[in-house]
Image (cartoon, rainbow, N blue to C red):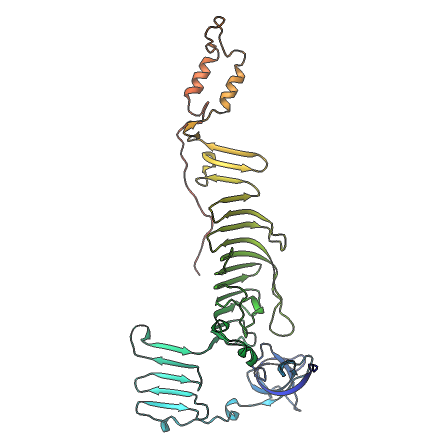
Length: 450
């Protein structure tokens, strides 16, 4: 088998100057036309022509730039910018002046009901009809149409047809940290396309990725369809893969907190909601757009299986690897409920009802049941400790002996307190004393719309 070779090849590319670094007279250029398409990261270059001055090239100018790419590999194609290579700006140019595309005069292409503005070689152009409809066509499968007439959802509509539809926030190049994509992924190369033989091999998804700033710390991302995770600047915007059968994924990142919502994956995590503590956030790599995976520790997680089983873990320590939680509750498919709480369980009717009606389980103090409106077993009140205290107090004077074998009534000394305790609700038993729970449950959290 022949050895795989890689060759540095200089190429003339087109770009836009986005910044000037005064310290070393270097220009930052965003490349939109190269052998590998637009580059996600900036290219830093110097002007090759001399003499030069500050007015030769300005921010926003379109420039021709010589960039060395690596060519070869298994597929014998351009791969990426050659490492450690120097880049040179050859000069500025006018994009419209050198494209070589000729267009017809709109007046020369008038049909019975429309005016055409098209390119004869490609078929791309604009069509304007007498009834106000506009069609923009690329000469291929992508086109847009707008209409001022129609009914229902087709009234005053604008429709775009494309295999891959991108909406990118401008003035954020070259990082594209704000991006939306809806489309069909048919393969990353001609060889990849030839291996996709069935309809299941053609992936369709909708994904949106928005950052608050150009830094990858705070961002929101969504994905529907073929699951393609959007993890900060790690997002591979040119590729779509199925990692899990998730129908919807959403990630919200803000500083040290990350919320992840996933739905549709078969099994125990059919619905997965979790809150993580970001210990180490994404870091931009020096090789252009990209980031290292964040290190996170779970604080809260709730999963619902496709059979209805529920698992909730809360009060997590946020320590990666240990997965320690202060609370765990699960309900399996049969309806069995399991509750674990590290530092106690309290069950009551409201915030202030712990002293009226409650069950408290403390890992150090044991179990306390408060039932001032009555505690019964099978409908019958239960004798409590007060009755035992009464017997303990009068154990030597409990009975009055009248004769051997005869009745032994309660001693007159103990009888009054016995009658009082027996008749007073809650004294010797757990019968009603009339107090009811407030049933007031409050939430101290507040929400304000933006």
